[in-house]
Length: 135
Image (cartoon, rainbow, N blue to C red; front, side, top):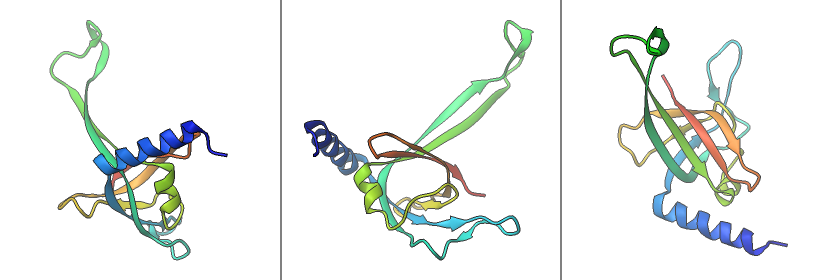
């Protein structure tokens, strides 16, 4: 039997999806040792809904050289991309999402196709998909 907390969480997830959510195209894929990733014929694809976020991370290279850092302006830049899906959104997906599947944001012109690099599931049924840009 659902608790008052389950109801509150479902309401919050719905509000987040309404305010910040967007639709993405999910393409299930399989990998083989002899080919690249190909569309998985056994799992249907479709649209999924969640909240996309991408943030830039800029780090200096650390070392023993001078005060704990290399001299000069050497820095490493990266971008972390994630797609959060509520438990309800995951249940609505045409098939289970797996590492290696493709995610495309069709409402963002010029947006790259992403591959699911890792899936971080919570004990409440929602998931954070860690994405990597496809080559």
